[in-house]
Structures are given as structure tokens and as C-alpha cells.
Image (cartoon, rainbow, N blue to C red; front, side):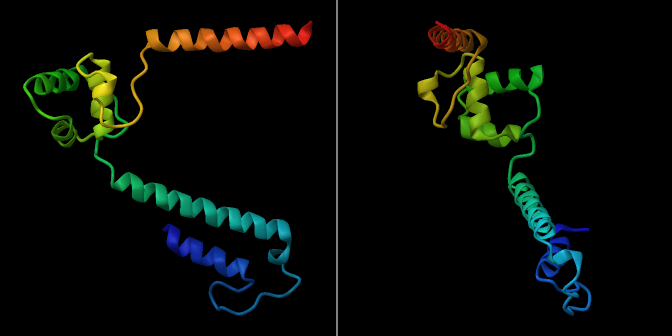
Length: 147
């Protein structure tokens, strides 16, 4: 069942109406209980979120979220070295501009300050010191609390 008819049925039930006839449901109906109404409202919200997510996903390029193959990375690197812009490469590879810039940065072909999108690739060597610093801070806090 598509989300829209399902939402319409749930909304009718929330309003205390029979979704088929539109007649008011009996006052002793289980649908008038607060916990049941909350559950119905939660279901409506979940269906609306799912529909919104599907709509956003439909607007994304085709390869969003797919892993990079070695061949695709090689083609990306060659095209970038040949002078193609990241925006053109995004269209060619069916990826977002952010994904193209992150991959180019990961391949060492683009510096973080050259990116036009927010966020950056954090390689293993960059992430490890940050974890060590957080761990050291947490250890110091725990040490102070215990003594």
C-alpha cells in the first residue's frame, strides 16, 4: 500500500472516524485510548519520514552510497589530472560533488583547503591521534574522580 493512502487511513482513525464510511467510531472503541492514539501518530510520522527520505533519495545521483571500484577511482584520478572539474566529474560518475572531492582528497589529488564542500576525508593516520587525545582526557577525568 502506498504511504499516502495508509496515512489517510491512520489520520481518519486518529480523528475517530471509520476510514471507509467516514462515520464516527463508537466512544468505547480502543482507538480513543491515549496510548493507541500515540501509536497511530507515531505510525503517521514514520510513514511521512519514509516518504520524505525516498523523495530525497530519488533526487540524488545514481551511485550515491555505492562503494568505489578500483577502475572508477583510476578513471576519476585520470580525468581530474587531465583538467576536468570536480563538478563535471560528479555528473560523469553519478556521485555528489562532496563525494568526488572527498575521494580526490583521499587519493591525494586535492588538499582540504581546495574543497568547495564542507567536511573532509579523515584518513586513518589523522583519526588515530584524535582518539588518543580523547582517551587521554577521559583517563585524566576518571583518575581525578577516583582519587
